[in-house]
Length: 176
Image (cartoon, rainbow, N blue to C red; front, side, top):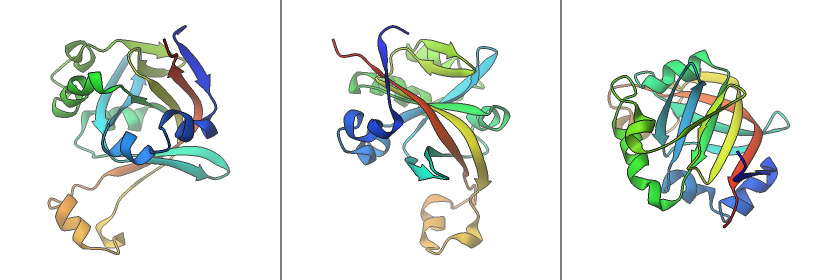
């Protein structure tokens, strides 16, 4: 899309997140989207991160098996992380509180899907991170060294699946 410019993955955190990836993910939220023009789903997330693993820039995301997006992250080898300006908070809230099984979340939230090379993202995003899935595994209760997390976050033992994806491309909205 012409209103986006490419950003090197290693420049994303400092230039785009204003030195605070914790706020961008934990407080401002992001949309995790997997699938393509033949079918996709998106979900709001406030857990995840970025770093370097296996000599590549990576993201790591967490999706519970009961989420509709899980089916798409399992089936597809690619996903995007879309970040938005505060004016899209209602759209993110909607996408986090409604299932794609029952709703056309993009349409109802006023978001425009963009399909590119097997990825799906949204034209309204201020930043999009494109990832190729490299690893997936379920969190396991027996592996928690701090068992209090299970009671706080997993009282039903509905542990997330973690996905690690190589960051292959980043685009950000051009400033006006």
